[in-house]
Length: 238
Image 1 (cartoon, rainbow, N blue to C red):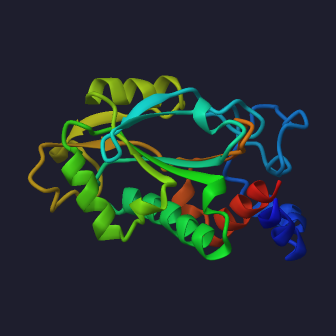
Image 2 (cartoon, rainbow, N blue to C red):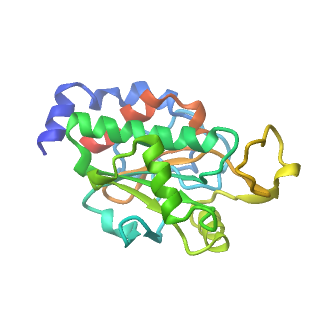
Image 3 (cartoon, helix red, strand yellow):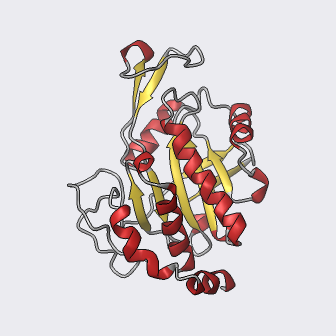
């Protein structure tokens, strides 16, 4: 593709080694990618994580997007688009979820600025659909300045909280616990009056167009946005 040739001309493909160490928060499960990945394996292994990571198949899912009225699946992107995906809830009180969504937003902006918006999908799955209605997600998008008209962003909203938490735990290996606000650690004031919050880690997944995980960032708020953008551009450039 012309976009891929353009990225190569900028030397993005050659940045894989440079970002491998910086992106090492994505741990590995003994996989070298088997030739199915663009990025090299992360330079450090941190045990045996529950979430998928470099060289694993991207988890299967089929979840409604209430803003477009369609059901989004992992399979529909295979052979078509890379995926940058995160998990959040709109009433997150400590800034973690907004930071995750902000990283996807910066990648969407970069894709628009550099002409590869049709080669990647940005997916943000709520695990609090009981609160995160279509109207709330639309307002959330407006607050962040997300371009829903670009055709590459989907808010994913499972049927209910039980379904959402089961999907995120079993398919994506990200356990979530719902806890009363008064029992949560840290500052949970200003929680829109809700009686509960969630404990979870800050996961972003990057998958290539062949449906293979290129990077997992389980502490994504500690990873610089530029590192994620460089990884995304390298994967899209193929």
